[in-house]
Length: 63
Image (tube, rainbow, N blue to C red):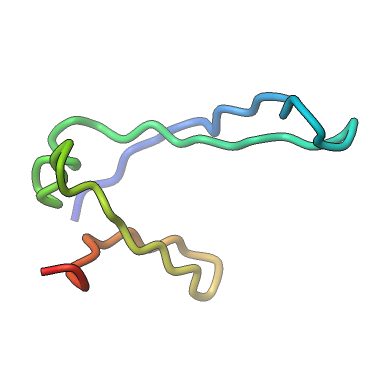
């Protein structure tokens, strides 16, 4: 198991969003993306929140 320390990227949302609305992004290391099998053509992921832990898996439903 590898662990990676990352910060959440937070930006104020624009357009018709409310004043206090933010969008959130998370940067992942390239080797994690490669190991998951993410490509520009096949970039779907499944995120599961379980007991305070975020689990990121490749979405294989379209295969």
